[in-house]
Amino acid sequence: MSLQSYEAIYHNGQVQWLGETPNVKKAKVIVTILEPRGDASQSIRRMPSVRIRGKGKILGDIMSPAAPVEEWNCAK
Image 1: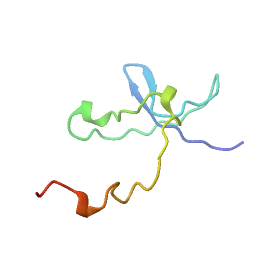
Image 2 (image 1 turned 60 degrees about the vertical axis):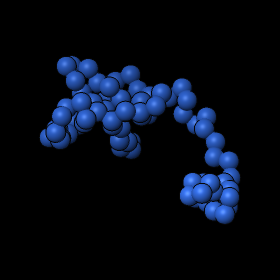
Image 3 (image 1 turned 90 degrees about the horizontal axis):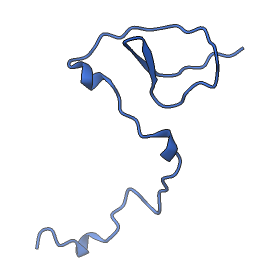
């Protein structure tokens, strides 16, 4: 048996998974209570839908500009 970690928010008796959902019907869980930081609405981390996971592609170099600095018009 191996341990696996999943993030979730427990709110009003409901569990809202943040990211991957465990593939089990029944499980023993350990709950860690974190003190809220500031506004409660800020503590919920928004995640994109799992239906779009893995569909984005990086094309080319993401660190360098697409055009040379000499071609930029922002200061002209």
